[in-house]
Length: 521
Picture 1 (tube, rainbow, N blue to C red):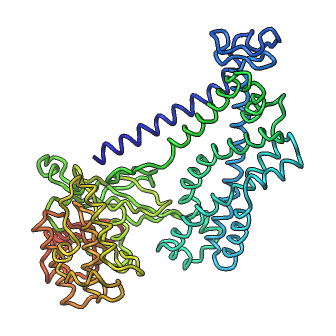
Picture 2 (cartoon, helix red, strand yellow; picture 1 turned 45 degrees about the horizontal axis):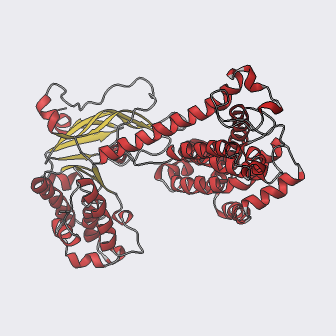
């Protein structure tokens, strides 16, 4: 079902792209290639309904409406795109600076943003344009000055998440300035959101410009926009001349629908990404056996020559040519010291690679596969102000949609699966002990119905008995449900004493190799 939904979204986006290209081509090309008699005007050909000679009819002065609509569409799109780009630049600048600087700078910029957003857009635009009537530049600037707050808020919200991440904290500790943080981390992360916001702003700006022209303070009749044509069509409505209104309005609607179809949709399942190469690199020492076709078909997770490098001076590689394969029902443990790249590898497998990171290689899930992620801090898996039961129910609802059936476990069954009392689900996260909350975090990851469970330091902060209980829970889940488990930890002793892992790898300097290879060396 999800594949069909993804295909449907892709089809709608393709249709929107084709429609937008067709509208733009009509506006740019048709006035130049239209027959010569369409470019002329005369009272003998005034107010003609649509015919083969004049597909959209003519206006009161005998102008061919198809040419007039194309010329007006060109003006409206130019105004809208110019306003969207200018508003986007202002919004990105304000949002990025607010997030990077924080504190009083953030508060001051956001109060300015709120003040501008509180003023009715159309009223403010009318006041500005009325001072410079008929000026194309004035309309563009007026629209941009009233529309940038929406972009600024989107950029700031996205940038704040980036600024709260571990790799930005490391850059700040290393002495990076706010400008460097914005250039290295914030801007690469927000460019996609800002671009989408600017694209979605285009139809909004088209309608505002058309409203200004309709009110008589926008573009003049000798250089009409779509709003100007709509305003000029009013006198003919009472006489039954519908075409001067219908076709400019249809052009407005076409632009709106085309951009709407290009908007956000449903993301696909799994993650495969090939990024810009970081330079020549040698594959990791632990490889998948590509000749074993039977084993490959059973693989729930396959990682081939994965490279993850964080932007900045030197583009440091957190993961350097890592390869591994996990089959159904198996537990693979990756051990290594802090800073070896274990969490970066796990984040890449979960599709959580930091924005702006450079990646290469391949991460592939088995057919119909998905991942569940247990964060290093169990508390990070939950909202602290809500009971656990409601949050687990949301995860189960998502997992149920992924299954395509309603026979999904309830919260109590999920709690029993990970070995905790179901009554604990009625508490807040802070009311649970470390071991209880860790297993609840595992339950939250399982609620999404994953085929691969990714556990980041599942024994951190736990005593030996609790660490053994959590690792035993992961082993039991793999045996009972066929779940593939990839866990990373620096607790070598817990992995060795528990014996829960089918395979143990060590990671150092971003590279993987089997523990047996280390012992033999």
